[in-house]
Length: 110
Image (cartoon, rainbow, N blue to C red; front, side):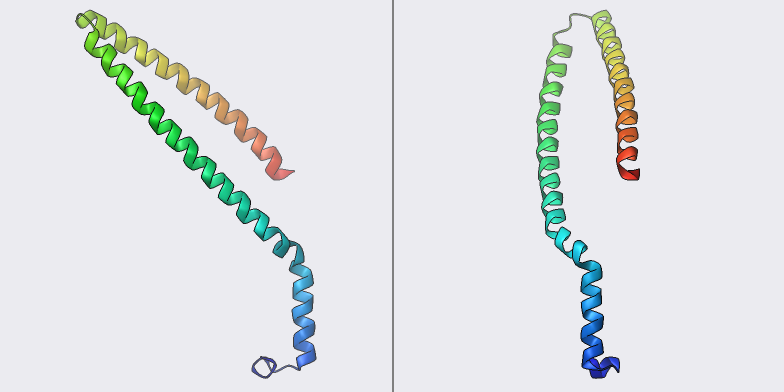
């Protein structure tokens, strides 16, 4: 490698050692980072699976409720209540997302 680089073996070793010392912390942190990333992926998969199951259950309840409504007026009221509930959830989610983004921006900048 020293011949290929056109330097002495001592110079090659010196360069490698200096590079290692400059990157030692990064090298030590990599295993922890990969473990953390893996844990986050596993938690994300679990949360997504739980949300999928919950979505199926909520959909079933919605359909059962819809099928049991006695007339068109009751269905309109049900749809109106459903729209209101969705809007309230959307508003709350937007507020929560904004608060989380503000907290994260403080962490990233800090």
